[in-house]
Image 1 (tube, helix red, strand yellow):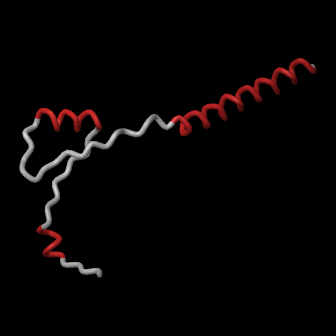
Image 2: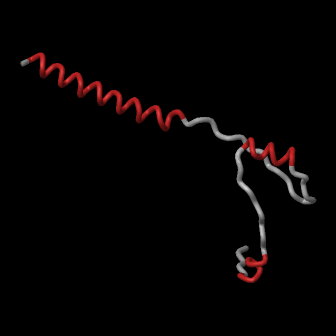
Image 3: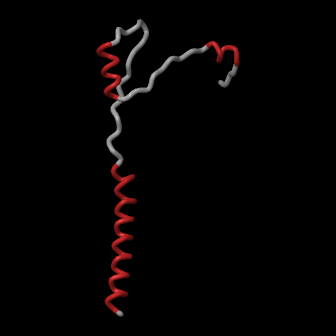
Length: 77
């Protein structure tokens, strides 16, 4: 059931605000809610440790490997 009408689409107005979890608590507590308006609380995702830890350990291992190769080559001479 696909129906597209540009005049109807232009009349639709959906006001929305995307804010953090703490800002939504502030909005819920201090702003007088309008009739039909509501605040949805969605918690923030935790810090994505794997996105930063894996590349960091890769770079550190590469640096240690290069240092080891340089050290062994210096010791061999």
